[in-house]
Length: 77
Image (cartoon, rainbow, N blue to C red; front, side):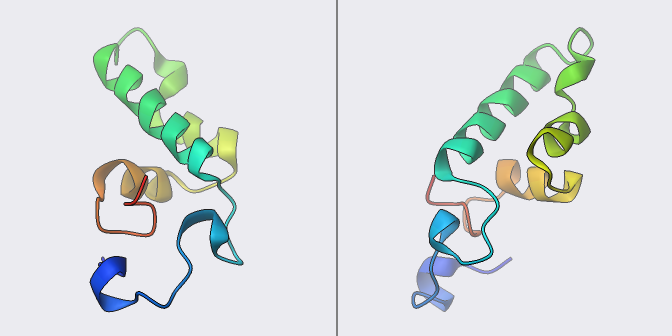
C-alpha cells in the first residue's frame, strides 16, 4: 500500500480526493464500529465488516484497508 505522505504528497487525501465516497467522519465511524465488532464479535453480527461495507456502499476489502492501514489514503484519520 502506498505511503501517501512520502510517495505521493501531491495527491489529495481522504474526502478531498475527487473520487471519495467517504468523509473523515465516516472513516472514524467505520473504525469505531470495527472496534465494537471485535469486542463483541459473537453478539453483534450486525457489525461485521461486510455489514459496515454495505452501510457505506463500499467493499469489505475497503473496510479492512481502512481499519488495518495507517499509511494508506485514510491513514491521516
